Length: 398
Ligand code: HEM
Image (cartoon, rainbow, N blue to C red; front, side, top):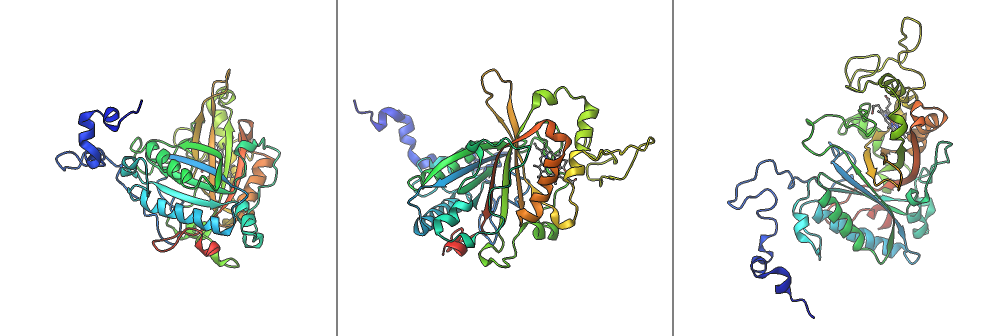
């Protein structure tokens, strides 16, 4: 029996039609006044020389990372098609407008600071038949002794980082972006992450990971010259990458059950910072510089040389990276209590000279390794941004 539109909607809902889209739902009350505290209509500019979602601060509360593989028939022309569709979708969705032929246009009315960042894996350059166009650092990371990589979370030809302060917005954007190109791509993995909900803490508070640690203190600050020189590519040798960058995504499982067994002093020594404020063990405030030379009255270093921050600290200024991490907390396997960890995400202009030396030291030794295990790994070149009249990746594909 045919289900009519009228039957599905009911007569009064049908009478409302599409006129109710947006109004009365997101921020604009029936009488036209702005409802208190609705931040769903906030937008982040999508266009410009650099892609959004990297220097966007504070990082949005929710993120989904999607790794996609190109189907064998995809060549240069299809890649251009994918990037044009994505750019058009991004231009509309991030500004609170439905995508073209959006089947759920109401969901687009709350962009909630939506950003979409597109990344190219090595497979893009293979599909183009131009492996020499790829930055030299664009390759799977070397195998580390600490790694227990699951192919289900490793590598991909293309990546989407979709961030917003609202999880419904993120889900809708991911759905639109993926379904519009599904004849050319398959999804290899989807990784969902979160930070504190917007408004839970005062603006400026550094996030906490699920180990309870303040995570993100020693980080270059978006908008500073320091950040710009560490993150954005200058185009030397590869003009199409100018104002682009690289993204490393490591899925790192955290053994919360054994972490629970460690007392507070042990937890603080393993990182080198206090749990209460995130201050270094040698200082009083979160932003104080750690003193790695300080010793106690028995001559023992206050921050152990094996502590995570002692091992991760840069050995030269240009070795720094920008971390923009998210927690994950997925359903545990039967018989397990938790399946949690960190979607470790870092942006840096050069993986080889910035990320790799740090990761090598952590692989060699890091007190945190006892409770953390990398289970997924992928690297991407993040092309520069686009604007109306251009598309993301045009410098390479155009
Ligand atoms: C610092 C946690 C993995 C690089 C920190 C801090 C915490 C932390 C709590 C101190 C506060 C801060 O400055 O943010 C973790 C956890 C990890 C993890 C729980 C895994 C689950 C990694 C990885 C890298 C890394 C894989 C890079 C390869 C750094 C760097 C710092 C840092 C560069 C700043 C060090 C400094 O100069 O003081 N991390 N981290 N971390 N972490 Fe990690």
